[in-house]
Image (cartoon, rainbow, N blue to C red; front, side, top):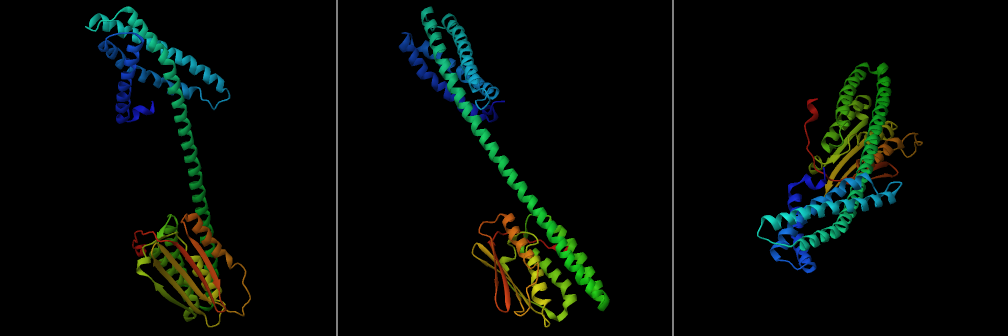
Length: 360
């Protein structure tokens, strides 16, 4: 179906346009052949509308013979032939309409007037059809350009979703590996603690799978998962692991990528608390400043301890998740001081719903 007929408003506007186009056509006919104004307008206005629908046939010929094919010259030849056919049909209909007007209405006209008017239709029909073909070719090119843009956009979206799935698959096994190592360390020395840790791990993984399948979560949901992770590690480290929180209530409902903070807190525990005899304090901060959300994870470090391998994996995952999240202005900054290590996340503050995930 022609795109024109997809909306009634388009058809109405198109019909009115061609009816108005009959006015100059009638005046041209009066200049070519002296005739009564009544006959000229009664002949030209309806025939102008007939031409308007006849030239729409260029839609199908343009689709059948595109200029972008291997033989554009053949398309041009076919369009010229089609213009002659459409003009001939228009002229034939015009001849019949002129005879009917002269015979069955008071609008009298001689045979010579009708013949000249028909010749005018034949001469005007060819350029009008070719103009319609040019417009249809431009429309088809515009439509093809938009289709190509949609395909590119879909490919970008698919690539982003694939990257997010890969990151989720990478995060969960990494955390599970570290948690199992912690449980293994407690089995001999603290079996009850190992049991509680297994229960906490199962609950954490269940909630992680539920939220990890989503494109975004609220910061409140993300912090709840972090609290469950810290509860698991608390069994292992006891009083050596201490946590301070500075959370802006306005930041709780902001949208963030799922599983964004857990790698940072895991790094803070592994590289900031586990390596110190007296443990240390991990500080969680979240503040909303205007249209931006700031999140920070701060942990102690032992300046004399040698650098541990693999410390950059969590930061790299978080950085890639921010990129895949597609938030403009999102960035990650990591700063190491003599006794502290601080990671700061900055991303747009987008409000969302904060459902209660504690129900399971």
